[in-house]
Length: 332
Image 1 (cartoon, rainbow, N blue to C red):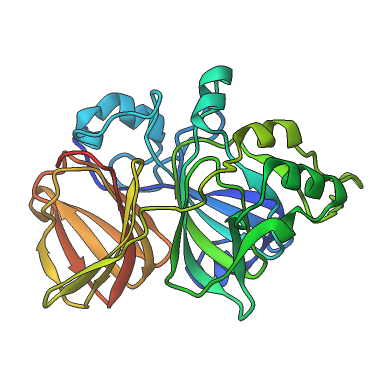
Image 2: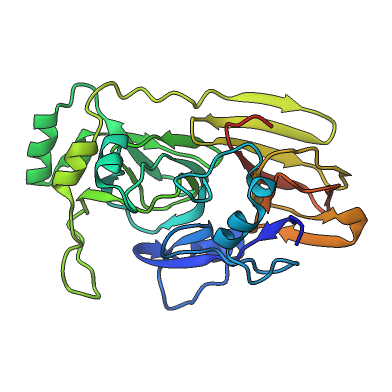
């Protein structure tokens, strides 16, 4: 089977802090009685494999396609510890997420297995008027200060509190202590890791167990960056043409994120020779290959993976479109 455009079945994740906004904002089909916190759009992990929803590769897992297509899917980009190098999600925070941190390179190397470095970025899809994120430590906060604040339940007061609006994008490299605030929906782009160390969970009790969720204070304190809190890679740049506007949002060693606005009625070649992922936030269109003999339609809420080895791919838009375009920092 030749490489073809891919859309996967969402992997829905119930979360204690989740809600139902992914249905109204992105058209996701959600069970009404369950709080859904995450929709995993593209995943290649030990216990979570994205399955192609339609098209010639329907029913195949992402991991199987990576093994089958190799460089035809990744181009010059490398696997991430033997896996597809991105994990793509949407998050709906009805309540605050825990104050947390992800493994740094040293801990990932020491523990191995499924413990991998986790760099991520949040694009704000929706935010209530008081929506916020917490990212990094306030100036001057020391290891000792933070340990004491964890003990007395005030560690969130030592984090940088950032009010957010739709269209903003924030990079969170591994080691950055953070929390997603209530009333915010984000598109999340990250390296393929699902290890999180919680230090504070807002004194929340899990209704299913009657107990607080587990914390991982010792592990988190090993990972948290207590040094310079400056985060590079969020410098914006714009390129515009008759049909489209492209805004660079995040440039990191793990991925590049751009916001693309494409007007209705575009019909032209897709000039990529690299892996590209589109997280479609608005609009509808189709990608055709093989001289129009194969067509994949997409709409708001779909995440489209365009393998590097696509031949003769073309794009048509049926409405004004907005998507996040995710690529890897490799030669095209």
